[in-house]
Length: 373
Length: 243
Image 1 (cartoon, helix red, strand yellow):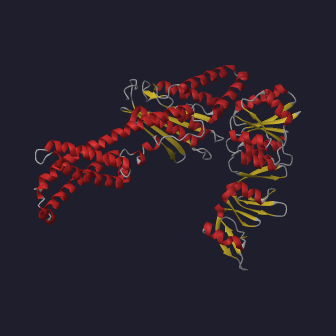
Image 2 (spheres, one colour):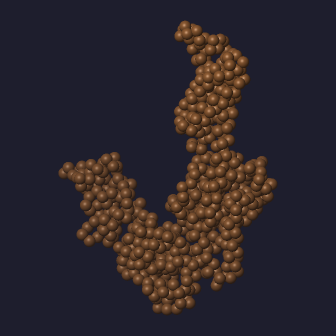
Image 3 (cartoon, one colour):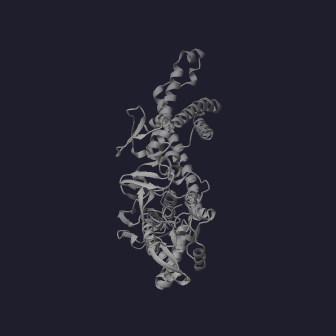
């Protein structure tokens, strides 16, 4: 990808960008919707069946099933109602804390319903009807046992939701990455300007023209590679430098790039075109709009098994619309996500007079293909 | 000999135009510029017949530069050059402005030079609107044969007379030939009409007061003159800007 074409995008699945910020990407389904509520009913019934089979000696399977179902449906639907109401809050807590709270909540519902059933068994109405044989005799063991079962089943259910969610999101991301890769081949402005530069150089400086044609070809080859393939960090840095050479011809002294990437291990495998689009954005938004130009700083660091790349550019004289920018960032974010999952991170924003993009991803020296799935 | 000024922020692009013009013959390069402002200065100094003007430049872009050129006593003909600007190209087609696509071809350049024509100010205005150009950032004024640019954010207000419009800005006052209506349309919501003949920069709005005769007046920051407000607009202004 040599920068995204600024064209209209077809609607694409809600993915990537929001996936990292919680919100809608939270893995718990919306229990206010009937599908998720139905899933809860199914889980409750299955549990009821298991419980009834396990203890059918006492009262016979069917009456045991009826009682367990009644109990578990109460638990299930109450939990669903609570999770439905609290979902935004849980999503804000993040995956780990949100899950813990959800688990605690569901367990508490089990305990509360159990206690309720016991109290109902003690009531006059039940006693008068002579139905107290259907109710538990002692509070402690009853509540404790139910809570323990509830805890296990709630944990399994949460895990189920989590895994399904991850699986679905993975498929969406793959599809989105393909679509984006198709759209994001080259910025036409860059292509035509480069051609114009080369046309000028063929007369005055044939050698530079030759070099520029080769560089452009290399860049194209890189942009045509399979979007999900990995390359070495050495290759990726070279692509970015190739791109810089072409822009340098055009922008001359206005473009200065400060490279500080010596700390990076060159054999690390990274998804292709990770850095080049960032450099392209930095030049397009930060250097081109300034008559005097400026410096793009590229810093690479290694902290243990974590690598980081930071690209900084001065804010343009005027704030250009950042559509193209956002598109490129989203594309990189998706590919990082596909390669490294939650271990990778992309941050971007203005800091004072600079625009800074930070990439962080694990150091994977071995080919990452295959190991991902 | 056609006298040509080349304007492009990229050196290779200027060189290429130079090479081609030298080959075409019948035209002579009198100078080049790498920014819109330089282009204005050079145009005033060198009085070229044709300006080859890059659309995308830092600072003043090509289309705004063309508009400023058009206030000159004898504006040059303009040919735009662009690598890729869908909207601009569409606008050039619509308003019959000369343009060239990069990489520039010799025969096209020769034809464009042969047919280069002046664009009128209304033409340029429509062109700017249709090309999705940014809002005007400067107003050009002419003092004898000197063009100067006033940054829009430094302008306090415009006041219209019979024939001219006065621009009051941080450095003083100037006369321009543009009408208030044109300016109002160009500058958008940053400016507000407070009277039939006055257009005010909202960032300097300070307060609305009544003068000795009970008429409403606007006070602007950094400006001693109180500007009369039409009665109809006083209430609206007060509400909109809490002044």
